[in-house]
Image (cartoon, rainbow over the protein chains, first blue to last red):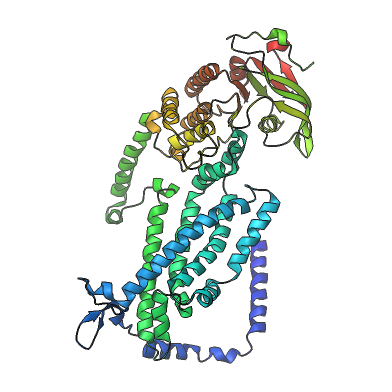
Length: 316
Length: 238
């Protein structure tokens, strides 16, 4: 078994190497890459210019928001490009994720092969694949041509891509749920929507929530890219900085802000999912118990565990 | 030979009606090839029927066929049971939604009593909520109402599955080894609660059971699958 796995891995690796060799014409270009990167990082990126966290100071000394309004916030950060851009991007991502999910979930439910017959599965999957096959930046470009610049084309682009991407993730999650509750629902004579809302969604809630949060995070990250086609948000400021006069250090600072927000969303996702995963039942070790001798730490957990178990047993 | 003699419609608790609620007409069951053939049986309101036989012989397949989850390979299953909510099913794995609370799992049974147009977003009204509370009390799980079912013991989970089925007020309950590997104390209380509810509802209970002694204690009729035949033992046939 292990030999087969090793052999398969080796064949795949060789295949990838052959493809790479076929695609790369000049291997010498790697030679200068580290030096190029070092120069770019030390001369252009580092240190990040944190002035993006401050309001704009006009010649008369007054503080302004990026859109030119006077900054009347007590904290200057709230008037900065990083804050205002990020707030717009988060709002765009929130709307797109919510609306996308509302449309994606019913579509996913008819694309899942345990919930609908094959012809309907195929039709739904073709729609989802179609929405997904165009990257969100191309959707944004199309909407920017139709509607002009601003957050609206960005929101529409993110929404369509969310439907395609989230729909695929969700029908796969729905296909993975246990068959027993579904069969039960069918035997009871529940309708498709009743089975979806009362069985499938609660049963796959862990995956659905995780995917929803991932999609929100994805849309926030892509907000930085969509700015390139004038779709608003923090991406618009990043786009301004990576074009002449090339303020890469400021763009870098904004990218760090995006990174911090993505980490925060990931933490939020972990907290939200803990309500519907079995992790919620697992006793996590407290950090300070590493300072205790092994026996004392074990006593602590056993004592705590016994108290929790007794609550369930009392009801039995 | 397999058709039940209607003149024999007397029962130990007198709750069996003469109404046929389900007719199996010369059916063969199985996946691709028949496991059991030529089954012709009538099932009447209010009776308790146990299906016995060794593992893998087709007991669960018969139950799934009656539930409408798979089609018989030949023959006809006809019934006078409403499609919505008429059949209560307790699968071997219980079919509980592990992340949901006890109350939500029981509510799943109750929504069949609600209009299908309302049930998606407004699944319960005040009466159904009261019924759920009463069902939990009768099966002694009211203290567990808000706990997710995944943390309950096997016996508690079985009570939830039974409450979910009973709240549905079905005419036919299909139970697949619903007593499982429970200890005798749990079995006794669950059997009592189920028998009481079945009698009150006037429902028919068709149960697959591996414990013969338990089956004979509960059932009015016993069907045994031998080879690829379904044979009726005791009860009305004898």
